[in-house]
Image: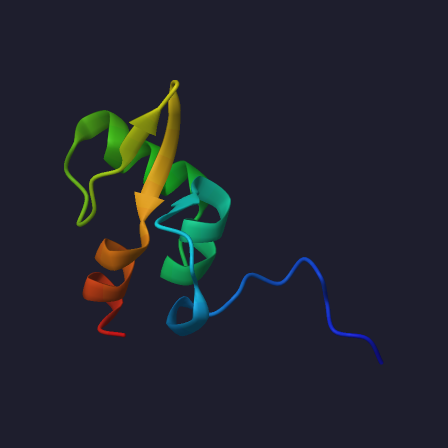
Length: 68
């Protein structure tokens, strides 16, 4: 059976500097709306980067929070 193309890459193998909200939420085992709330209230364990109005979650911070 072919691997699932929609499955996010593990953080250990991630080469991008930041991830979009749905992928970051997958790794943190949270709903994407939870991450958006953290960004809005600025009270979450990770601060996103805003790029042209969109949220990007730093991979280094995701690794730090998850202990990877």
